[in-house]
Amino acid sequence: MDNADIAHHRFPFGTHFFTTFVIFMYLGILKIVSNAMKTRSAYSLKKFMMCYNVYQIVACIAAMKMYLDSKVAFWELYCPESRPIDSYIAYNIGFFVYWVKVSEMSETVVFLLRKKNNQVTPLHVFHHCVTVTFIYVSCAYDFQSGAFLAVFTNCVVHVLMYLYYLITVLFSKWNLHKIKPLKQALTLIQIAQFLLMLFHLLAHQVLGCSYPSFVSIWYAFGYSVFLVLFIDFYRKSYKKTDKKNN
Image (cartoon, rainbow, N blue to C red; front, side):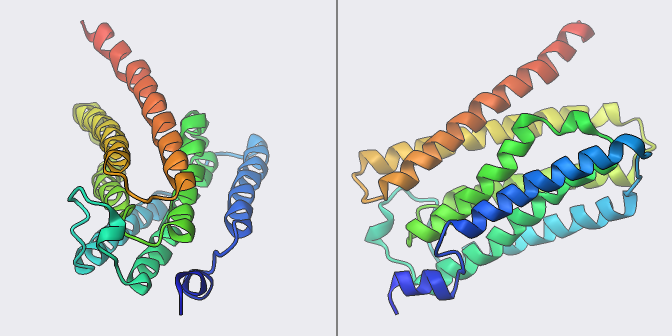
């Protein structure tokens, strides 16, 4: 069975229509929930958020273990085609991570149900939509291990992020401004992640890897936009706070 067959059988996204449907369904649900909550009181959802954060931590750790078990030295700089990986392994990992990323879209619905509309920013929505397409593009067009570092790094960041969120839910009665520097540090870690991924893409170009050009362009576009938006978020969220404290 060749790679094209595997794409259709092991990872049922041989066409972009399903991922497009997921994204439009996500945006449609946000619109419906947002309108419905205009005349309703906010929900607490504390127990759900506790379970959700634990689930995300476990799922990300499981994905990291899958990458490590693949025995691919994805942290090294090399052309993926020079070290072929079993396509079944790649698609099994991709299948799992894809649905983890789809499940993350529920966060936005929770924000709306809790009437935390200020957290439903263009950056937040854009991030969820593009992240799903990253996994789809990686599995549909790149049959090697080129995207392993990006997803593994993202899982590491998300373990830290959801651990922070879990702490804020479990200890909501604490004076949480004392741990606000952790949130600031997480934003810096995310910015560093995007810089690392852009460097990784550039290195592949310098090495002359036969990466599908569409994949490289889409990744470069997505990470560049993430980088600009996260830096802007950091500047607006933390620089103003620092000035007030001074």
